[in-house]
Image (cartoon, rainbow, N blue to C red):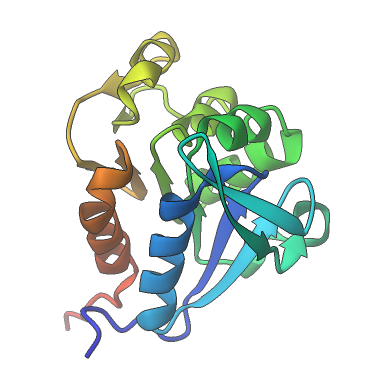
Amino acid sequence: MHTADITGKRVAILVYNHFEQAEFEEPLKALKDAGADVHVVSASTTDLQGLNHIEKGGRFTADVLLTNAKPEQYDALVLPGGVVNADKLRMVGEAQDWVNHFIDEGKLVAAICHAPWLLVSADAIESRRLTSYYTLQDDIKNAGGDWTDQSVVIDGSLITSRQPSDLADFNKAVLNALKPKPIIL
């Protein structure tokens, strides 16, 4: 039995490469288990390498390259962290455009660990409340964000989380945000 039924929701997990494997695999599994149609979108290559902190992890294959994907096709954007992945992805203009599309449309953006670097580079956090891996707090504050040290922070359609040990809270928040809302008559 799923904690959330999000059948029909289309979710993009956007990476560059060399991402933190747990922050990729665990949300991917949780989303698929709940019925979402999940696509791994890569800004660099379809042949991906996960990392367990700094050690090589598993190999993965992206479903589509960023240049061939359209943000309009998705209901939510999930951004795994990992220092290398996040540092490279933040400099990809099209990835910044994706973040701004989702933010402007009020669609869910969920970023964990170092992934909020992309939000900083996309100029998408001014006056927003969020968290991240603790080493990003100065970047977030300098970009006008309100950084806080909590396992998960929800600010409208933006969900952020600190690190792999917070994945259970992160996944729960993402699934809850994607659940159909009751219609009030």
